[in-house]
Amino acid sequence: MNPMKVCQHCRVPFELASTGRPPTYCSSTCRKNAWQDAKTRQQVEAAVAAERRRIADALGLTTEAGGPA
Image 1 (cartoon, rainbow, N blue to C red):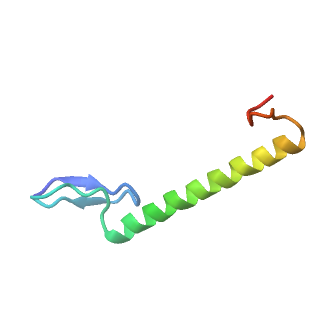
Image 2 (cartoon, rainbow, N blue to C red):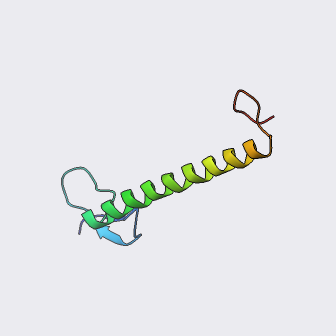
């Protein structure tokens, strides 16, 4: 029996092949979904940061250098 590994996206155990580099995901679908989740997370974080900057600017809480006062 080959060793097992847990998929980094769905957390389901899967059997490793006896040769080659060990995969991180159990399938190409999980790999694609993990990539999409990471991309969405980055977009949300960027939008939140932009909104925080906008609010800080509106309240006059930033300096000319762009950092907090």
